[in-house]
Each structure stands twice: as C-alpha cells, then as structure tokens.
Image (cartoon, rainbow, N blue to C red; front, side):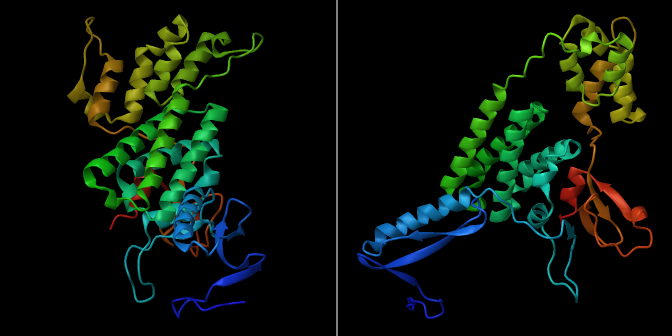
Length: 347
C-alpha cells in the first residue's frame, strides 16, 4: 500500500498493517548477512525519536560492513586525463577498491606487499580516499591483524603499519581538522580505539613453543645456518635471529654478511661517503649499513607484485590477467612497487 512522501520525486513510503495500525517500514542493506536486505520496522508514533534511532542504526551498519566493493574484473584501466572518448580519470581509492587486496593478503608472496602499500597510504593518501575506499581500507587492515594473530606471520611489519596509521590519524584530527576525514567523527574515534586495541594485541603476542622433538634452526649445521642468514634482506630480521643463541650471534655479526647486505640495498658510490672504519682498521660494514639507511632508501623485495601493462595502461594481478591487445603481452609488463602504485595516480 504505497503512499507519496513529502518529496514528489521520491518513490513513496512502504507501510505495513499491524495490530496497532499502519506502521512505516525502512529498508537497510546489511552485506554481512549474505547480501540480503533486512527489514527494520520503526514505529511512526514518535517520529523524532525514531529518526535519531534510524540514523544511529544506519551509521552503525555502514561502519561495521565487512565486505568490500566487488567487481567482476580484477584489473583497472589507469586513466590520467580526459579525452574525447573518456571523460574523467582513475583515482587511487577506485584502484584500491577494484583490485582484490582482501584475497591478496592470504597469499604469503603478496602479504608484505599489501602491508607496505597500506603503510604508504596511511602516511599521506588516506585523506584523499572516498568513504567506500576508507571503509575497505580498515576492513582489509582488520583481516591483516587477524591473520597475524592466528599465524604469527611478520608481526613487526604490521606493528609499524599501525604505528604510522595511528600517528597520521591523530595528526589529521588535532592539527589539520576533522573536516578532512569523511564520515562521522564518532566512527573515526571507534577506529582509533580499534587501532589501539590491535597494537595491544600484537604487543602481547606470544609465539607458540616448539615441541621437544622438533628440529630448529640451531640443530642445522653451521654452513646451513650461515646460508639461511645470507638469504635475509632485512637487517632487523638478522639481528633478531642473532639473539636466539650465542652461535647465531656470531654468525649474524659476520662482516661479509653485512657487506653483501650493503651491496644489495645501496650503490657502491654511496659507500665512500659513509665509510666507517673500526678500531682494528677494518671497515665496519654493520655500522655502515645503518648509516647508509638514514640517508638513502633501501631496496624493497617482494615475492609477487602488481603488474602494469604499458600497451594497455592496465594495472592488475598477474594470475588474474587482463584483456591485452598486444602481440607480445609479456614484453609490455613491468612490476609495480607500492610507491610506484601511488605515483601512478598522482596528477
């Protein structure tokens, strides 16, 4: 039984007959329950009170939606300027929604890549996101934290992400102003409280103890332990492994290990500017690495990254593919680092 509302352009209100008379119905979509619309009946007797309750319920539903915007295609065309055929341009938030980052964090090869990308977005690009992209950002972040709590995989990297995100949000709210954040300020306060809770959970994370009969890295021969350390590209990981046993401490202080690490991350012309000599007259490669780290960016290494097709100007995950029109698609692909991903959408 439809009735026209106050606005003649609206489709009207829906009413339902009950024992107490006719009551107006409101529909809200809750994507957390199999994408079905739940029917919320609100009494029309006290409309002012019900309106405030409706508003609070709507904000709560919108802020707790767990799903991201799904698209049939898993790629995005990077449009940087308007043309006669296409009007507009692609935004960073649109690319973040279109590309499947929720499933990417389940792949161990892409986990560090996604976490690093979220860290760069938290430092400078979060305020440029739309409301849907910001909601999607925090949904993915929650999945990352839950994965670390379950699998104990790389908690240090996620702690750094939460630290940068918390600092950026506090700076935006206190100094820049609340107007740069999309949405109700109460929702952002709840998000900050969640971040503090996640930081506390990761800080108190306990690694599971191995059983007495299980083999550990200390049971391996010394040359195998040395080869494992030579595969590390993160200096903090090498230091952490060196704290396990005195033997690992000696292996982690090997000058050739730190020399190879310096050559991997920095160019040789940088060494002469930050040359550090020990008391014995030898080059202290460990101290020189941390000195170079203060002035130059380190080389980033990921198991799998996003790919950009220069022929089609399409950004995509390699296993999902894209409709390429080139005769040799593989020759047009270039890997996209997290910083390059953000640079693609700067105009």
